[in-house]
Length: 77
Image (cartoon, rainbow, N blue to C red; front, side, top):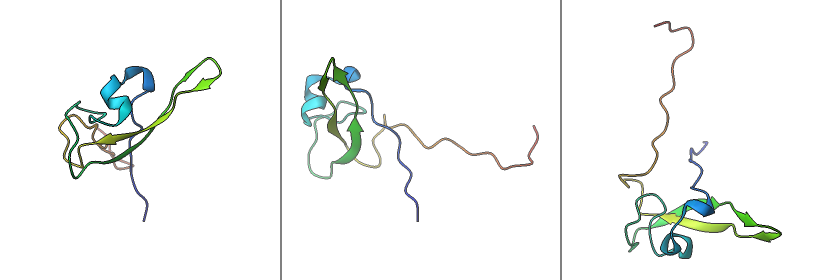
């Protein structure tokens, strides 16, 4: 079984609360129970690695990027 996951936003695109793990990295709402990891946001400043684990509201976050629709091979428009 393979899991599908979108890359989280870059560190430069996060607010302080999102970077600190207080808010959802997608919609910015305050996190409560049920929050889950969205992955590791990548970023650096010179030689300093600023990458951090970020969190999302959950699977049904309204601002979370959705899985792209795949087209079947051989289909023509």
